[in-house]
Image (cartoon, rainbow, N blue to C red):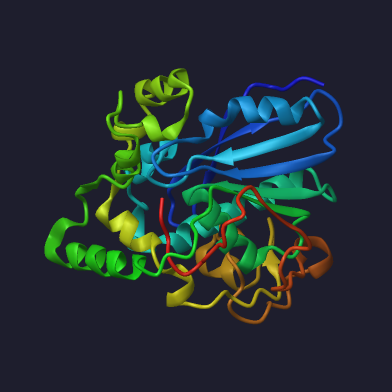
Length: 297
């Protein structure tokens, strides 16, 4: 089996933002799927080599450009969540929406959710909220227990209140301190200088795609601001239950229901049950303990 190229597709976020994603498919049957969530100041296209290795083994790969990143930034703005100021909830909604796309195209196929760096925190939050049907959860480079980040979040929120919401934030610069004297600002990224240079020259990565202060502040304490939602059902295309009636679009159908299902909604055709239990299997690429209270890149 060989991979297709990571062709670009688009889905519409609940706020109308255009969220771009890539899809890699094997030539033959899809034995499983991986939904990948990238890290800060990069984009889905950087995972082509990983996707090629997976598709060679019959695994399909889907990866979106997160809000404020890559080609999605054309709609939301660089380092911004987009319209409405809903913060990380919109990102989790996008993850859910792409999950439904995958499930519609390849039903009853095992799905693994993989997140790297900042993406590992998004993936973990998504799995806690709606991960009952995951076959596995892979967290690459996750944040460890970091209680000092509480002070960082407070400082970010104060900066937003002071009018610095749209200021670019050097969220990655401190990582290079242990590598000084360094050849570049991003020597920490890889021991392979060619990989470092590729990142620096990529117009959709690094200094060209900084997070804003508001983005970092909005991402920071999602689990502490609100508990995971109870998702007794999840709407799908054609459903006319509460969330679809309120918004009148397919994108709204990717959001969790917040009131009882209308009589016109057929559970067998367009809705499916989803408990709030955790995935059956969790795989981490780091032995460090993982905390979900604070976000970091």
